[in-house]
Amino acid sequence: MKAKTKYVPVPSRSILPERDAGRDPVLECVKLGITLGGIKAVEDFNLTIGRTEIVGLIGPNGAGKTTVFNLLTKVYQPTTGTILLNGQDTHGMNTMQVNKAGIARTFQNIRLFRNLSVIDNVKTAMNNEMRYNMLSAILRLPNYRREEVAAHRRALKLLSIFDMQNVADVPAGSLPYGAQRRLEIVRALATNPSLLLLDEPAAGMNPSETADLMDNIRKVHEMFQIAIILIEHDMSLVMNICEGICVLNFGHVIAKGTPDEIQSNPAVIEAYLGRKKEA
Amino acid sequence: MTMRRLINLKRVEARRIYLTYAVVIAAYVICQVMSSTKFLSSSMRGMLVPICAYMVMAVSLNLVVGILGELSLGHAGFMSVGAFSGVATAILLQGVIPFAPVRLAIAMIVAAVFAALAGFIIGIPVLRLKGDYLAIVTLAFGEIIKSILNNFYLGVDSGGLHFSMLTDTTRLLPGGKLIIRGPMGISGIQKIATFPAGFILLMIALMIVFNLVNSRSGRAFMAIRDDRIAAESIGLDITKYKMMAFVMSAALAGSAGALFAMNYSTIVANKFDFNTSILILVFVVLGGQGNMLGGIIAAAVLTILPEKLREFSEYRMLLYAIVLIVMMLATNNAEIKEFLSRFNPFRRKEEA
Image (cartoon, rainbow over all chains, first blue to last red; front, side, top):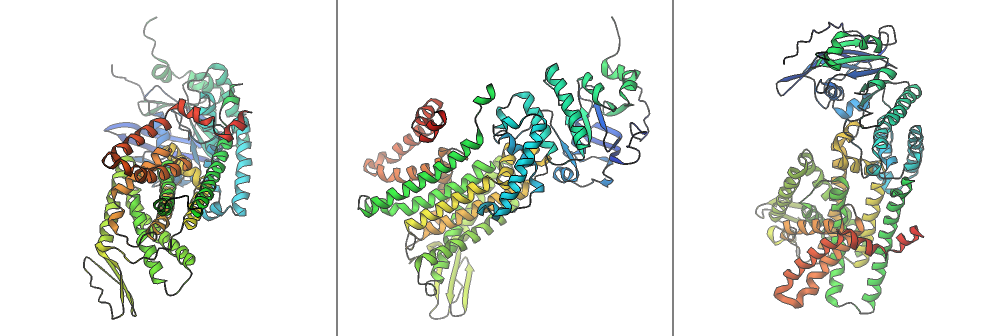
């Protein structure tokens, strides 16, 4: 059956214009689009996010949510449109440069450095703030020691947010599933991002783990005062912690607004939660 | 709690490093004592330096294969660059520096620089590739290095250094000396490589690799090995770190090559062919990827083995293959590993 979704026209504005997004956006996507294998995976994606906003990106499977993340982090180069990060055009940047510019992410299918210890996963993410060179490392010069100790302390501090300092020396691959997801968030935070992208952080978690995660995300948001975009299927999580929500379907934004607005939006109910057909 | 049963990587790593140093030092002392008490046969004594060189090769290749996670099949190429540049340096310095150990050290440093340079030049195209493609291209570059050195002529006379390719057109002045003679290689090398020098080089190689692995660069290497996409997403410069590991590995291979070459009176480029590259890879795989001590032991065993099997004449390579297969099976068998670990004094301490 062909989906005949009526697209709600969305102006290129922030989800919550009354918040800081209007004044000082951390991210502005204008008419972002990409064609993958002849299919327009994402088209005309406009989104503006304030410096300390938590935004949910929801939509049915295959709607293009992760593709948006991949566009933002330049895993894919967008075919059309521009991404402004802190007012700076990210055109021509690669994944590494985008991270340095301030976007950090987690992955839908966990991508940890499995053979490294938990703390080394975090320290690896701090690589760009360390300055010592190969020679100091080989000869164990004082600046090597100083920076390594500082990084170790900071990594432990970050891990303690998620209550993971006790497993710092355990191989990341041997952690339980939920802890691996949390470690991915810590690793992303260690790069000092101004925008954190979480790709289904609660996937595979039970309700109590999800509740813990929710607290943790709130805590991170408060502590670091950063913007967060969250892809999630767990509606209780999204509705509870997101200030704004953007709904994608077939690569198009079909609705934007506060959780309340989204919950009552007929286009969203039809596209995402399913059309009422029969009883 | 289940967490307590998880391995503490930090402790395991530290223990592995100390064990490696301890074993190498102990082996050196034992060999020195045996050698001075004439307990070692002269053929074994002659093998001490090549074994050291192969151990350094194993350690250096382990940096690329085990730590960085890229297969390199042309490692002997860097060894030969180091061998030729190192020996040429030693010959040129013969009159200038009469003290052999200093000459050897300078030759090994020059060898490392030249091999690093070769590694950098080769790394530019090679490190754009991934996995199997990278492996095959390194194989090709190993062969290219061999061919170049087979056609390289270098001479010295009062006018300075002269070199030519393909044919000897150096036209040296009277009294000049042709050092590298194309396919004839270098002959008349002074055998200044000694077992202590080999031991020191191995210790330096181990120190470099271990200290590098436990630094931000080493973490970056292993992160790239474990997950390239995640490594990029946290802002690691993949190409830079791959190049760093590749060049460092080439440099160590170069100095090992210089050490190796100066144990013989003649050296030709064909010595460092594909078979040598594979032999070094076998050391690494047999010893366990990323396991320096394993690679060192494998290098020693697999260098001595063919000599010891000489008495079986035509069955020699057959036995060599069987021993290799048995060792591969044994080192990958959990039960045998468990059994062997009982004899590990360091492990017992942890359980107590």
